[in-house]
Length: 330
Image (cartoon, rainbow, N blue to C red; front, side, top):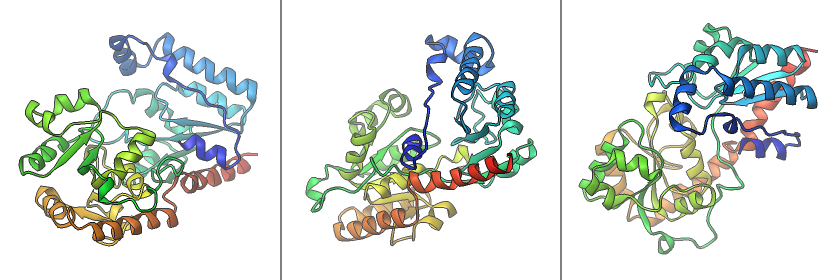
């Protein structure tokens, strides 16, 4: 989606997918992802350098590329190529995910790091990063847009909806909602939710599988209340899902945080909660109040559009910074 925004801005983008370079065997993949050595890693880095020599780009953009070797970044920079890391996840957080070994070594060799967390900026600097820019994840306006005129509760068949993954304590919170009689629907990875939920809860609330792109947007349209959780184990200040829901014109019920309340006026452009009890109260307050939901959803959608929570606006912040870095290096 970020590539779409770059192309719309007139940049020529050469796409390179790192996935084909990883092992197809799941066990071997887990091993290679942890140790990040061997022929799979070597071939990826060789191909990056081959393409760079062939097309001579102004910028190399790494969108969470975990198998980059520092020597590859050094060579790219020696060719006059500005190197950018766009990292949606938190390599310094408490979650302790595997796979960060090479990335930590890469940090000093990127010209620009893009992070969505204030807490990460000093961590990057501590590890030798040059320039670090705070950005936010965004909605993609070609996918996340409001429903047709006249859309109403007659078109909605999902009462209280969560579309996503069972990170942190989400399964426990949603289980409590279901047990309290809240008409809940969950969509996402069937395998993940089957593991996270008790069988009787899974059978009661799970449906429609993973929803992506058009199906995701339509899932938001068909939901009266759209839940958005922070990933606290990743130290999130806000979440991309909140901007996507707003972009789709959905009624947003999000976990309260400074990142969220700075971006949406509480009770006017979105509704927030702290903990399960307030979450239930907000659901009961708004579930059967269609006029209030419609008013708040429309205001949230307008705020997302006017405040630049879309991909084009967020990518422009980065490309302006890249242009300045590239110019100063000449």
